[in-house]
Length: 102
Image (tube, one colour):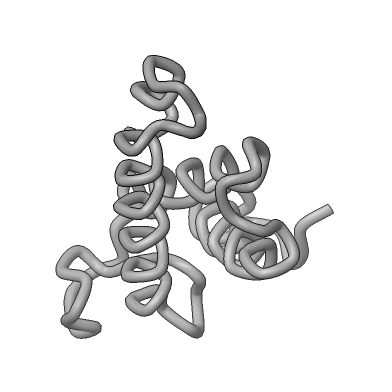
């Protein structure tokens, strides 16, 4: 992940810029595949007939949160996707018997 290797490059280096570009491009690509109903991602990203993948949804959500916290992506632009993903994961598993999240 970008957050693991970014500290090894000076922030204004060409390599850092390339890695950040790859990260942002990847993040935007996975957001296109986010299920609009649940906020999660399908096992095969471009096939919404496949099952919703919990572990990948968690990893994608973590990648978004880390990017926002470190300033790689703007929070105001990506925060709704994070909330929707977290709600989908939590609703499906952690709060299975509850009506709403607190």
